[in-house]
Length: 175
Image 1 (cartoon, helix red, strand yellow):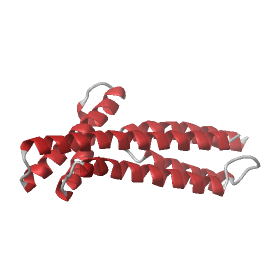
Image 2 (cartoon, helix red, strand yellow):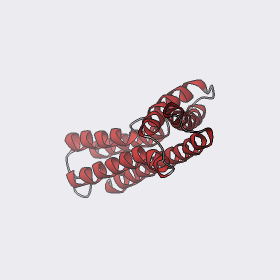
Image 3 (spheres, helix red, strand yellow):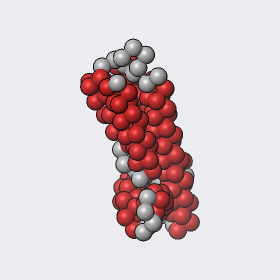
Image 4 (cartoon, helix red, strand yellow):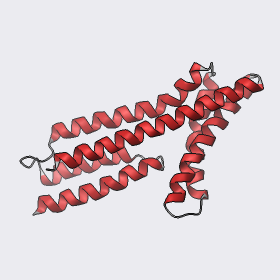
């Protein structure tokens, strides 16, 4: 009985964590943490998740973070972006995501939409400012900004996909 109560709590929390990824919160890492707490509290029940499940989930979380972090910079680098542009793109994208989540007044959905739009605008703006700082011409700034924005969106999608994979993997391991 205790196992199924804990399994239900784990599933609900992890569902919230997948949604948190859209807001650029560390949902994948929280899912790693919730599985750790579950294993410490309940143990490795027959047929349930075990410590090897945790290692796989940890690997998926790391892979999602790596893809998210490098995708925006990689796309911008393909267009010849400076390091300054890539760093500013990442930083301003994070700030934009947080600001966007707070500024859109529609409950729940507005926060998610605001976070995504803010991240995209921040990636573009950060890359554009970085290239302006190094003296690039306007057309190159715009091209690099678009590449950083597209890369950031791909990275967010990759992280969300890895979060969904973690959720499904943990859910299946409970049975």
